[in-house]
Length: 141
Image (cartoon, rainbow, N blue to C red; front, side, top):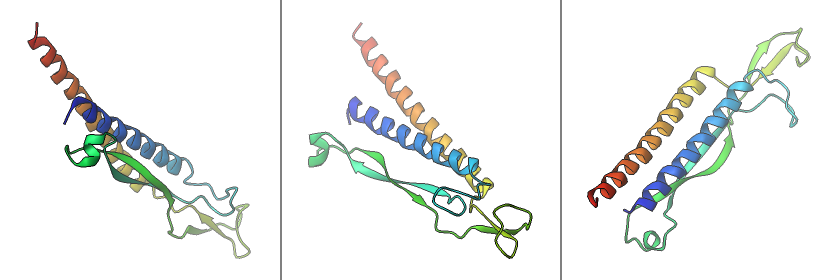
């Protein structure tokens, strides 16, 4: 695997984890949003990642392992909303129940920690590759 492939893999993973953290932050920010433009409460979103073969011709032919990660899609969670009895709420139905988003802050925080650790691991991989390149260049001096 060459340096360009290593950087391509790490940079694609950094972009994917960054988007994942943005979606998690949006979930946390809307954990109490009972009204959306689409109608009803906010629906939790989740990022679906997939591995793609490398973009280089050698990678496509299978001469070299490698590939990148990409965001396949951002899905809305199909779980039903959390229903709470609050007859004084402006979004309460005729029976006094309010539909809140299906966002569990504890799960979102665990997902955020996992995405942060994956991001940090890819930064470490980029830095290790840079150190190897610097060491290779210093050999020729």
